[in-house]
Length: 318
Image (tube, rainbow, N blue to C red; front, side, top):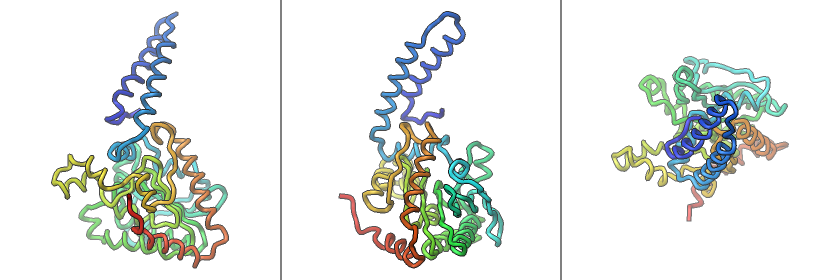
């Protein structure tokens, strides 16, 4: 387990409990289970206290946890008969974006998501989940396919933002993001989106312009990262804690503002502590959101999505 900065006291307790068990395994006739169990109990209480009311910056840290389940794990556990479809038919393949045909609980669908990678090699391969223009154009191609064959679209958002490199800008990064967002608004099939980690900037909006948007309890969704916001407003990236609070990027704030439709509870300690439970909860939420559109005509689905975004901004935080 990788521990975050604010989890250091928890790391000490759990580490001591494991040391006691290791000593018991080495020494014959040594029974340290009671002492280890007492430390486990203290650690469980501390974990509850730490996660009882996380501030926005701590939620940002949890959303970025390296052991949090990624798009590939959700696809492997929730979807069957997944057939990846690669390339944008214009430039090339972008490994930061996964997508293809699949079955979700025996229902044919198209699934699209950002993939960050799990170790150094895969993170470099997937560009840390930061898509280039060809990634968004691939998503457009898949959404067109979904619309043609009347398949619902499920998107899994987990990106720090679109890739800001020179090559991406030369190939029309902003235009690709805008076209992807436009395509989300145009297709006559339901789009259900879940922010499973970071929802950063237009790179997230390009997949999350959906009929229904859900966020995991400790995920974030914002126009800019706290560090980027702090650098612009205060000329100091170290002011990221203040920026995280000002941005209202947590699922709880965004639900109050009606930017998202539901919050999916996470296991105690975050999705990284019980990935299977978190993934199952996402599956249940997606199933419920898709059920809302059963029997609806394309025109109704498009109108529902359009009205959702027209209504945004009408509610403020008290």
